[in-house]
Image (cartoon, rainbow, N blue to C red):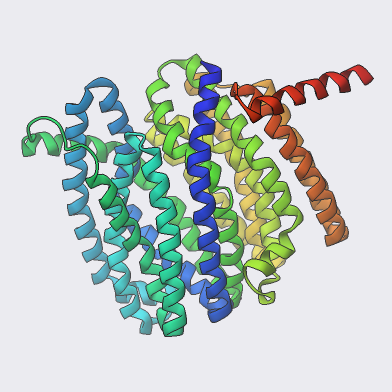
Length: 502
């Protein structure tokens, strides 16, 4: 079972990861265009608009994008096609109403939002247009919940690839044609394209089985999703509201230029690991939800997912840490040099983030809604308060330090709660590999403080060694065949030879 599970994790990671890489590259190309054409202030405004739209989308969505995944997966395991059909119809009608109401309320509040959060009342018309993105975000969330619950990994990957390429092409075109006036179009293109692609692939599914359920039955199913989703909504709202609060603090205290520096580092930090973290929500979460009542199986599944995540992310993280100055200049412009310091602190925090994410899904799969909300609240309070306290002394670098501090608190918290819920303990392999990555990251960071060249040389060397080890370990644990099997055999022979020399 363990080997099959490793292979399943790797398969999902390879499919979603490959799609995410294309999506990441397309998104970074879009942000590069924004950096060149708009400068740090424009990039900061893009991030602020996106944060406002995501915050409103979280509220209007009521967390059903997450609870819907769990309900679809559970219905498939317990009630089969007819059970899925009821959930599917409840998702459609419920989120249709939610999206319309959410968009309308956001539109009505646009003047207040422009004055309160952007501090520019003259942008009220632009903010009103974001209501379209709010409604489509809710609808797209329901589409993705259905596809994730059915584990349509291939369709999800195709949506990500097409969305990344089409969204980037149209977004860059909008900026090149209209300049700063095209900024709003670039922000809205993403939810529009995501919704249209999601609609296409959902329409390709087999029609819902069985007779159409009565409105009362659909309302009951939607109510169940909403009750579970409320915890997801609150936690998601806390997260995006916290990020919005950080942006507002930076803009008010340090100005729009500093906000652009923060947005540059944040964009990289939030996107470059999605090739692994995205697969967790797509494949790992539904499988864990189905196995959560079997404690030993759940513990094993979480450990395997964590090990794969650390092995895949470790080399990338170390390489990013080593090349941070060049990454910022490549993806943005020389004006964004202050973002390097933020990014380095965030990369250190990302090591802990990779280990924490699988444990966060334990709370979601176990429907521990209140507990999940508390953990997310603690994390965001640490982030926002850390920025507020440290910014007067450290400037914009405080945002990166607060991000690391957030995960220094969050990881032990979810580890303890995982132990309470399923008796979780990290395996020896996970602890050893995580410690290796942490020590390597600290060494590279200290070397980079002396010289960027020294840090880059050491970091790339370590990243290559970690990549080789990860390839051998993954090919062995997944019972790979073909070339990967040959790699595994070579690694085993190399390990035996090294032990013989001791």
